[in-house]
Image 1 (tube, rainbow, N blue to C red):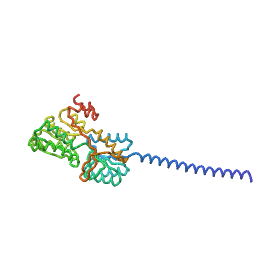
Image 2 (tube, one colour):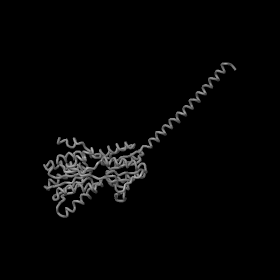
Image 3 (cartoon, rainbow, N blue to C red):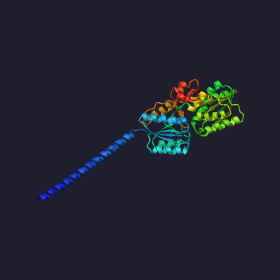
Length: 356
């Protein structure tokens, strides 16, 4: 065998060996990549995914709810996907479907409509996703948890505050939206205080209005209507601070701001400023750090299948569902520093900005 032929054979063997090495290396690399991807998917699946469906972000308080909830969930290692329906029932349903398509582990919903949102809850349950009804109760839907402040007490606090200071006179009530179950509960609270006084003849309720989508403009128009009819108004219960804003705007135009007692809820910054100015008498403070923070903790627990140890229940029209109930606080000039400001809900400079 010639030397030339031996060299050709050797070269061929080397080429075969190189080919085999490349083939083996390629398979090893593919296995490594596949394993890496598997690890990433596994790690990703360990992260709890929370869908947060908000009926609106129009009011200041809902922005606070969202931000606090997201911060707490992130601290707990969860990922939050937020959707805002802008007061549109159909959009909320579509957005919940979008969240479910993202394979969320749990749905937290602030329903735009207390009844229509039950379709969203049903959709989630069919997908095997647990549901927390946040601050507003979805009716007839058997959610896994309802978390909110004691809204009946909110109504009581507003009425008690007024009755103590104005035990006789004409009261006007401008509620929030009829499609929000909180409005019904707040009414239950203030009725328990006012109706005995109405029966005795001490208090006369000159009107009880309902504001679609909690519209401040409607509250303004309603107040205008009673002023134009020459009613003497002694006190007004507003469904929330946004409605109080419209009411006080109307009163201001007739030089009645500060003359008519106005109470509301939420402790919005503008409301706190009005309390210091004297145009709003009181607001019911609901510490959102507690509500949103606890909701995030409970959402993670539910997603992990852990026990919640919630003892209260509330009837949703069809089922008794677990109710995590928080306590609201009446706030006026005398305790605003020790509540809203002390908690860091608003800064003192912001609340007192018009008096500094």
